[in-house]
Structures are given as C-alpha cells and as structure tokens.
Image 1 (spheres, rainbow, N blue to C red):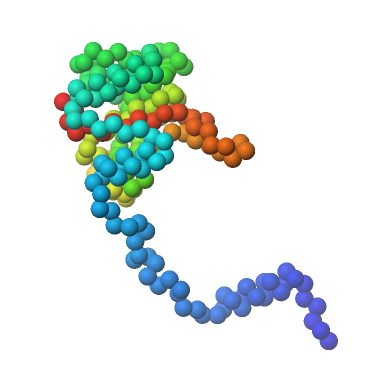
Image 2 (cartoon, rainbow, N blue to C red):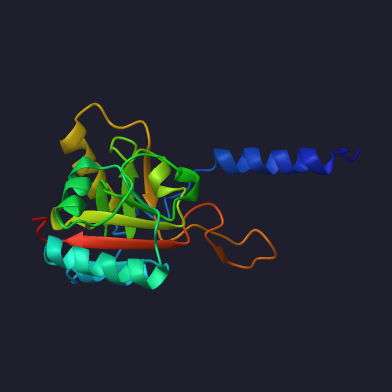
Length: 214
C-alpha cells in the first residue's frame, strides 16, 4: 500500500535527510580570505573618492586659516545665516577668526547648518563615525539641512575595525551609548524607487579634513 505523505511532510523529510548527510565545506578558507582588495592609495585620496561617490563633499585644509576661508566661501554660496556649533574646541576656532555662529540652541528650529566634530573618518567606504559623547550630541548632525564635519588627519583610518579601535583607545570601557556611521547625505528610495536626498536628515554633507587646527 502506497504511503500517503503530504507535500509538507515530504519537504521536512528531505531536510532531515540533508542535515544528517556530512558534506565537505565548499569554502574552507572563507574566514581567512580578504573581503577587500589590498589598498594602495593614500587614505585621504581613498576617503575623498568614496565620499564623493555617495554625494558627499570633501575639503582638505592645511590649517585653521584655510578652513575659515573655505567655510566663508560655502556660507556665501548657500547664503547661510543660522549656523550652529556646540563644540567648545570648534567654537574657539571660529571665534578666533570672528566667524558668526550660534553657540546655544536658540531658534534651533530655523537651523541651516550644524558644525560638529567626529570620532573617525573611514576611508574604505567614505563614512563618518559620530557619537553622542561630543558636545554636539545627536541633534546637530541630524536636524539642520547642511552638516559640516571637522576632522583631524589622525582620525582618518582605513576600515571600520580601525575606527572602533580609536573609540576603544579614547573611551576604554565607557563606549558612548550612541555610535553611528554617516555615509553621505540622508537618502531614501522608498517612494516609487526614486532616490531622494535629505529625506530623513541633512541634504548636504561637507567633511573638512584639517592637517593642523592652529
């Protein structure tokens, strides 16, 4: 008499049989293999290429004077008036060149630009690592339409693992409660698969890499 087996039972029977069969690992060296090709470019060049590829803007500055000249040019180009900066170190730099900015959250709903520091720049994918440990907190990198990131050359690393090592070296066991990677301006393609920039955050991202803060 033929056994009456449902399609579900038949499928489960095949799965059990497959699990009992011993098979050689088809990729025995997968864990040791490289995920990326060996990088031969300078980190500054690689980061600039990857950031530009995701619609970000990269500006290299030799020193504070170079930075002020570039940010003045951007402010004139975009007609910025509501520029916010809550990082004491950056406030001192901007104030030393008499660059106007808001150092509190007064009229923050009208903010056009947020200037923040970062934890690291990841060259491999053009990402910026930020955390809530800096004075800018969470809001300043998310709410304004334009986000300006200031980084030192010592914060530029190749991979994500290197960025986390910087965090560990800086904070030890007290890792910030919020660590996030920003890769280009905010974007979404949820509506009819049409890419829209600035849907959930800044429309423009500018990364200033400063060799010498003085």
